[in-house]
Image (cartoon, rainbow, N blue to C red; front, top):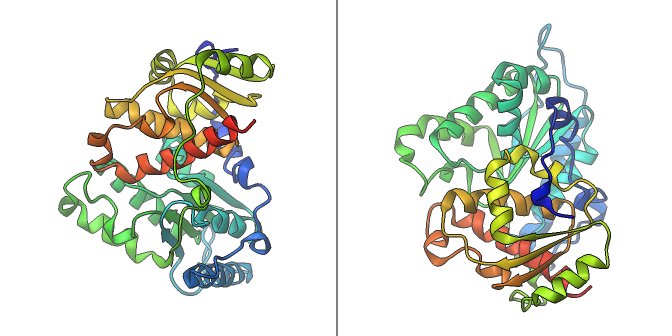
Length: 333
């Protein structure tokens, strides 16, 4: 079975229905979050998110026919920190604890939703929420800056509370990617909506192993795929070509009913547009906890140094962290 042979169609209604925490974090709760005793910011972050959840649980007063008054204080909570420090665990725990209706998605998923429903349609679809959770909050270009600022402003006006994670403080979003000065007003407006909580610590995915596993041989990859009828097998260049023809909003559906992913001929990605598609693809793999069997170059070398030195550095590093964890799961199977 090959991913490159699949062309899933995704209705807008599915995009809305899937605004829930990914399967990897389906069981995440405040009670299962384990703060590192050597990192006091993690315990402080847990307390801050729990307090925000309690604030949300109080019935909001009515503000008007279609609007509710937001809870007291800033309408948003922003968890900032490095990779693998538990920010997503805390965000999903908040979603589980919050009153309904609530929605959860990545920044990319919400931009895809606007593309599918239109701006007004997205405001209507999300405007009745008590909470909107945005994981991996980034501003990758000026258009996204304006779009997100406008969307969040409209939702806050309707009484929607916000929660987000990122590896970038909200007043630094967009730096290194475009002329932030030209969009300073929008960035400052976004920052003003959030109370920022810092979460420090090492990446839990690599506390016991700091490098990617050695690549498998092509025959070993095929053998592991053959042993699992729900696993897929793709040649890396062919998969990249297929991802280029498929809208990123369909990458999740591409992995429906897949249990593991085999890749042969893994090689560095030199084109930035291709690399950003790989980031989205890796996020969907990680959401679904799909082990990766790979031959070719080590998985932590798919983004060359020039890309890692650019404005999307943190996105690429997050993807490498996640892909390395999935490859480690695949190599240990």
